[in-house]
Image 1 (cartoon, rainbow, N blue to C red):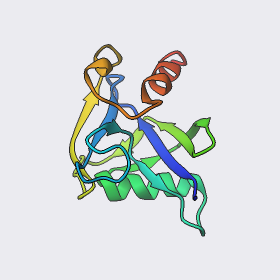
Image 2: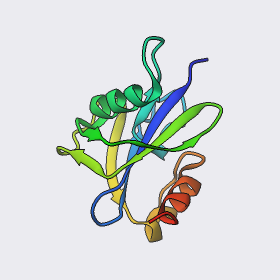
Image 3: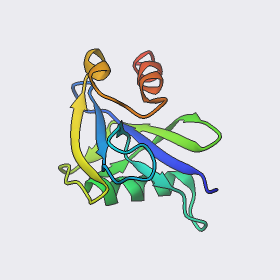
Length: 122
């Protein structure tokens, strides 16, 4: 099984970008998660995270910092992005969410803990 890569994108108002997975998604349908996906055999995880974010949202991200490495994925963090979110076919909705409101969303495992760790940093 190949490793995954995802990005916690945070805006100027300290909100995290979440994407709602499509109902027919194989993994975690209809849950909210981070932009990201599988690392291809010929790429590094940071490049995969950038590529997947572009494919899923059309956002261009830069200056990624590794936030966490787990067995199945490398998670990055950035506040450096340009563009406007335009979703691909894998997602049905998107939202910028504040820490105080993340409990209102049915998120994939780990996202709440990642966001909590992140906000403890700044």
